[in-house]
Amino acid sequence: MFRRVLLSASRSDRLKQALVQTPVSGGVVRRFVAGETASDAVSVSRDLISDGRLVTIDHLGEDTIDLTQAEATRDAYVKLLRLLSEARLTAGAEVSVKLSAIGQSLPGDGEKIALEHARQICSAAASAGTTVTVDMEDHTTTDATLAAVAELRRDFPSTGAVLQAYLFRTQADCRDLAHAGSRVRLCKGAYKEPESVAYTDGPDVDRAYVRCLKILMAGQGYPMVASHDPRLIEIAGALAVRHDRAKGSYEYQMLYGVRPAEQQRLASQGEKMRVYLPYGDQWYEYLVRRMAEKPANLALFVRSLTSKS
Ligand code: FDA
Image (tube, rainbow, N blue to C red; front, side, top):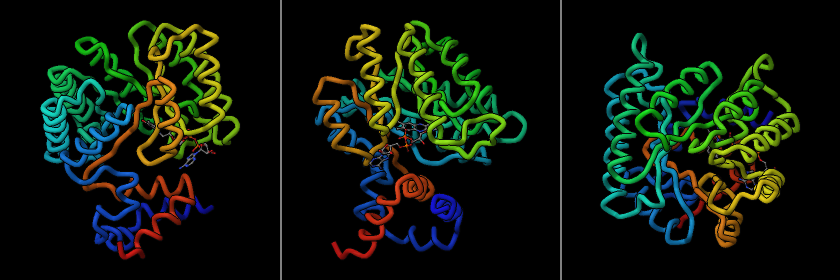
């Protein structure tokens, strides 16, 4: 119920107006978002990398229905990759891209336009010495997104795919993608999906996540365990041991600002720990979703709005 209220708040223009007037430098916004500019993203990446973590940077914004905006998002990624390269951070930093932000939902040729933009971002990433992971969105886009990843991997084999454990189809997708060289991020899934395509109960999603993780850990690919869930993190560690996987042949991933102490603990044990780091002026919807996931984050946010510092 609370989650539903917050998710509808993410679509409230009045609430958005009120919050947008809060400078992004405000404490809690800064806890979850690097800032509004590429320089902010580079600066926070530098801090995280010097602390032993890795990053994947997301330029905030999705569902672009305007070609100019899709091109601007592509340009933002290309500029970010250049700045990361100049700052010599690309050994520890990659980028995450939503196809809907670079044109997938444009009428007519949207899929083709998004693929071309993604190719340009992958090319900029390769020149900078890093790579791209293609985020997964709602289930109506899964086939198209996996097809785009397959296409991108012809020229850029390290392009990462994302699979969502809550979808019934995902075990089969894990089997398809668990081959040598294949980077696969496994997450629970963040969209409101119908019961016809996805598990909707928490425990069912968790069990599906474990089944998928078993396939990825047993396979030849590079699993990226994207979860804050302590039980799943423990199970991932146990599966890595069972399959004789050396540290570094898989990685953990968490969102910036979520369980930072756990991120540091895993990194200090020699695990690869990558932080998903969003930046950009479209931070509002992203932030409200984080509030919906964890009400304690909302209390922190409200405190920061009323604090004078
Ligand atoms: P869940 O939210 O169920 O939390 C499980 C447990 O984790 C909690 O009970 C608590 O113990 C702990 N926990 C969670 N949040 C916490 C907090 N703020 N503080 C303290 N403890 C906390 N989704 C998608 O559909 N497409 C995508 O491309 C991506 N990409 C992506 C990348 C990365 C790096 C991450 C981490 C996540 C995504 N996601 C995503 C989002 C994902 O699908 C999911 O919605 C969130 O990660 C929340 O799921 P958890 O696995 O963390 O478990």
